[in-house]
Image 1 (cartoon, rainbow, N blue to C red):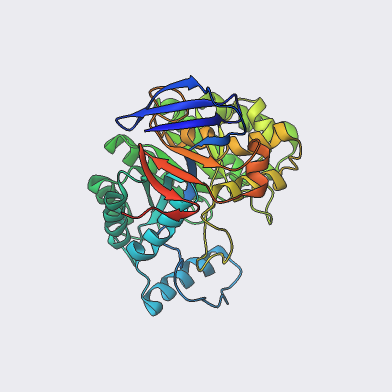
Image 2 (cartoon, rainbow, N blue to C red):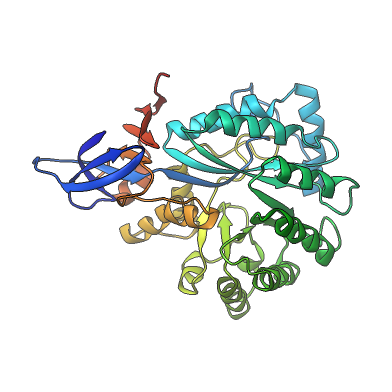
Length: 385
């Protein structure tokens, strides 16, 4: 395959030669005139394919205000309306693909209600999507680990079956035992040689304590580059010097941070985190589910949300927002062979835009999406076959 006369990330026009699913070379284009903007495949750093209602009729949300309200409500709704993680998860993953996302990390619930049901369904979806989309699955203890007998063992089995990472959640607020919770998470990670991705919604000093424990374990176990904290709202709650110290600690330990840039919460300071060496990337989190009726499988829209949340207005700053759904996402999740250089996997997205800033704020459907050297979508719709 040759993509003629395209501008990689807005640079001078080139012809991109693709061989055996990889970028073989980029040669200066001999053609005059305007050229389409070439992006690498977009990265969804945090979503929940097993929770989505994508493709189903509208569900009226009347859930209570607390996190445990939402957790228990979700279990009831799943049973009542017959949700299928494979069916709705596939609809959401394919919508992502049509919008240019070729790498995706999804958390998948492991609890007393579902046990390994959703894990098995999404492992099947991962296999079915292989070659079109690279999917990572995080075995996620939505309801905690220690408070529910059997969850640790089901997480162990989920990793044995093939989940790519082990998750955790709010070790003090849900399990009421931060040391025990993190011992379980990191113990499973060590046993199965898997990375870690921990939901941390805990505020203020409570969240700061968890961040310190996570950094200590990451450093002690030599897991730098293999641990992610998702959300990390405490870093947005705390005063500048305290937050700076925690972000420097995380950066030194090799812990990355994933944000959904939610409008309703304080969030870690993106630009300051980058200055301190912390890898920060973005994900949608919940998309059209019983937790949240909003969000969409469109990572350029998520980049715009990042820009709005952090007041990024200049073109150069909008390019930083784009990084959170591209190179930073690949680095934080450990997606290899990523980018627009020779040798990288040929995940290519062509858009009608003059620069990255315009691509982020106009969000036109991609003219072409290539995944692993295969054309998978045109004009915002999946390609036939």
